[in-house]
Picture 1 (cartoon, rainbow, N blue to C red):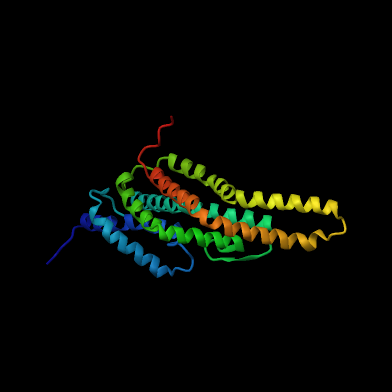
Picture 2 (picture 1 turned 30 degrees about the vertical axis):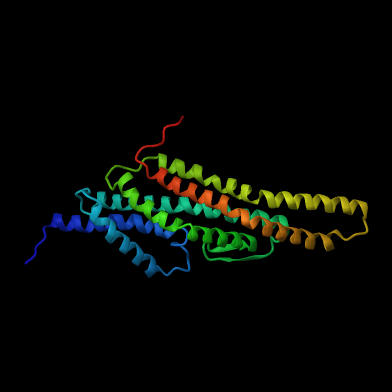
Length: 264
């Protein structure tokens, strides 16, 4: 007859529950895995499967009752770490969506909004188009698998301990959040520049021929120029989008490092 002591039972439960919490935290927030269209049982099943693979290789864990106060604090800490890792990659997608918002507003398509299941809000048509484009690059380059690989590596670089989370993680994540505006402006800058030139040309044309109806000819021209520029820019968007996705992976590695990076 197989028997377990209470300490052995606590170790078995904690050895599975704590890594599962970190994994589920990432799955909830990471792009693709955390999409609202993915059923909750699928997310939980994926988390349980990954935890079953990762848990046996974790080594020594704190000998604590997972239902004690210290055990619950570790549980909360692991969930926060997983959320931070997934949120770091989600910021990249938010930056691309912001590029679409800037482009759509400049084109005059600010009124063309649709429901976005990822953010549970409304976003412009151009924003959703660019979000789908970066999602395709995300899948084609296997970045989603790299995210899971980085998650597994994080159990070595940031093991499960009773030590509180270093504050540098939150500082790095806050600084990384500012990249939303940088990514949005950089990706939309060529389109915005072309539309700015178009609007300047329309202004000169209106001054030269005041009888022309600016609102009648302005919207079709700006929308047409915008779509032409999007078509011309599409072959070149894969490189900058792939680069920012790699930056997101690097940020995940940085926030799960044991010590803050040394400033030069």
